[in-house]
Length: 185
Image 1 (cartoon, helix red, strand yellow):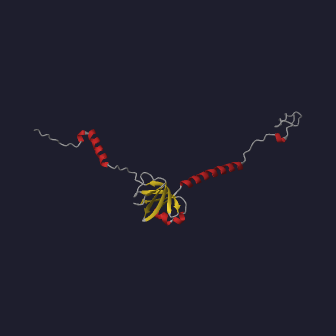
Image 2 (image 1 turned 180 degrees about the vertical axis):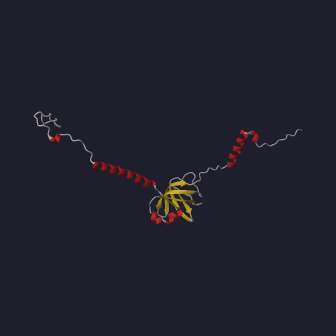
Image 3 (image 1 turned 135 degrees about the vertical axis):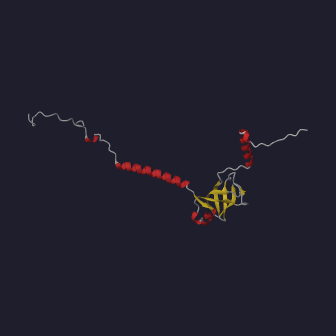
C-alpha cells in the first residue's frame, strides 16, 4: 500500500457541532491585563488615602509657648500642641471655660480651655495643650499633664518604716534590738 491509498484514517470530529453559528461558540475567558492594573491602582489609591488621612489627623505639631507666640502668623488656625508651665495666680474658672496662662522661656501665652481640666491640673505644673490660635489667645480643648514616671508618696517615711517592719518580722536575728532593763522595786 502506498501513502496515497483511498483508505485513510477517519477525520477528527469538529470542535463545534455542525450547524451552530460561530457567535454561539463559547470562548475561553482571557484575563485582560488592563483590568488587573486598574484594580491594583484603585486598591493602592484607597489604602494610600486612608493612611494619609489617618496620619494627617493623628499628626499634631508640638511647640513650646515661646515658639507658638513667635510663629503665630505661620501657625494660623491649624491645630497644634503647645507646652509650658501654668503661671501661678492666673487660673480662673469662667463658666464652661478655664482661663490661665502658660510660660516658656520667659514668654507667656494666654489660654482659654473649653471644658473641665484634669484633676491634677494646678498652677506651677507643666502641661501640654492641644488646640489652635483664636484671636489673641490659644483655644485649648485638651490638657495633658506632664509628670515624671516615678511615684512619690506623700508620706514616704511610712513606707520605709513598713518595709523595715516586714524585714524584721521575716528575720528576727537581724532585727534591731533595743535592750530593755526592768527595774524591780
